[in-house]
Image (cartoon, rainbow, N blue to C red; front, top):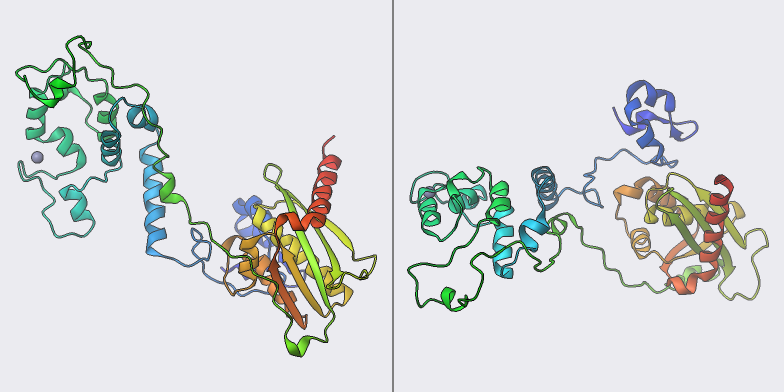
Length: 374
Ligand SMILES: [Zn+2]
């Protein structure tokens, strides 16, 4: 089955009869997805990336994040690691152990390095837990350490072990008289120390794995019209979208004017607003504002249009052939409608300079919300 099988070619929108007969479980989800009206061809895309292209990095990230979210569902990072009363380098070490990120033989082997994955001392698989607790040599070290805790009774999983080991009670070192450990512990120090006290609050360790780099754009100056097109009557259009992340409602605003601003294009087209529901992101709302403005410009019979938006991501997408999986259909319709103009340009404008469109869009959203809220 293809997406096009679920689109009614007559009305160029979802064929709800076909959808309810085949994939009715996805009805709610599909209602928030815009079906392109410009007959975009079906395309296989990799949804975890914005441009729809698969990369080994994104594939690895998805698999790791899924595993991490499942594995750490009951693990308290703050109390078990970042707020333990110990040196930052020890916290980092524990964090790496919890993430199974220590360069153990098993990890090196898993990453394709030609090493023996087994422990050199006992020939069992050398995992983080094995090194820290399970290896007979490690157990012997723990047995000899001045802890008032029977380490052999600790849990058999790494995360549970990390959660319990912080509760192990230190006794005064015995048989040591002139080490740095002893020098740092004055005699009047209490015999026991509680390791679970406030430490340093570091960033959440999972987020760097799932965060996507935010595209960096340089504001593109308004390109001058081509010399062959200087005779065209270019209309400037300023768009803005106000989006409510809770209700997923968006207010769209735009207005037209000439380059010289010496006279208005027409009273009908000066300020326009619209609202949309089921808008899933601010980027989608901005794209809807541009598409709505272009549709009106087409209706008004404009030959050349210069769109200004304060959404840098959108402007960059429109000035390239890049795709964005979240707004693929809207971008397709924008590009299709642009082909009907002799000239279409897209430029970034700072939000402070886009005040008129800003105010009309916000007014549209406010009016819509006040109408539906009793
Ligand atoms: Zn071992």
